[in-house]
Image (cartoon, rainbow, N blue to C red; front, side):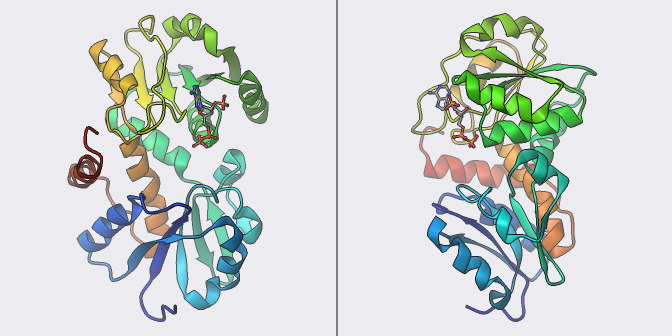
Length: 284
Ligand code: ATR
């Protein structure tokens, strides 16, 4: 496949059929009148080397990287940015002359979504409690430390939380999953980064009745749009933030790298994505 004329970008992952990135980048390309494309490509782990070996001939200007390739792509890149180094993963690739560079915009997306939905959330020295210790937790913690927040990681497997806390150093502590309740009265921001609550996954089994009344509750999951955690939080009077905003906000920097314009996250775009999620996942 050759792409000699138009700027072509991609999102690559495995599986990739579910990705909503083509829908959101397609919306911006059309809105901004940019002639280019953004398409999803399914790359199995064993095909990663071949993909990068033929990158130049295919004419890609860059793209997004998703599960399971976010760390595996790093050896194929000439350089990665400071955010990608801190998070240990790449979600955006672009060309710089002959070089292929990588970055990570997940922390920017995580924080941009909070700024957008709950302005004033970042009280100086605020206390964020992160549920989970995987890749999404890494991005969230990196973003929160950058905004002067104190972080406690609470994870089912304590050792994973300890490893993550050691990676980030001061400003990050660990508490046992069973002790979540003792953290909640001093929590300003509670974030779910586990896979619990996602469609076809077990629900998140936590009691948030002791959570500080002013606390914001954030779930990085966006299918369903309103997870059990967010329903419970809203019923208790908390401000809530869902993962769809993070998806939209992490995408703007990549679009700028490839197409030269920073697009805007609009309520119209959100509605388009919401409708698609509801249509394809009844009950979401
Ligand atoms: P991602 O990279 O997308 O964040 P991940 O690395 O698979 O995903 O991380 C999943 C997180 O969800 C982990 O923190 C995991 O906890 P463990 O470290 O104990 O595995 C957490 N998780 C998954 N299922 C869970 C469950 N049923 N209860 C609590 N936490 C769960």
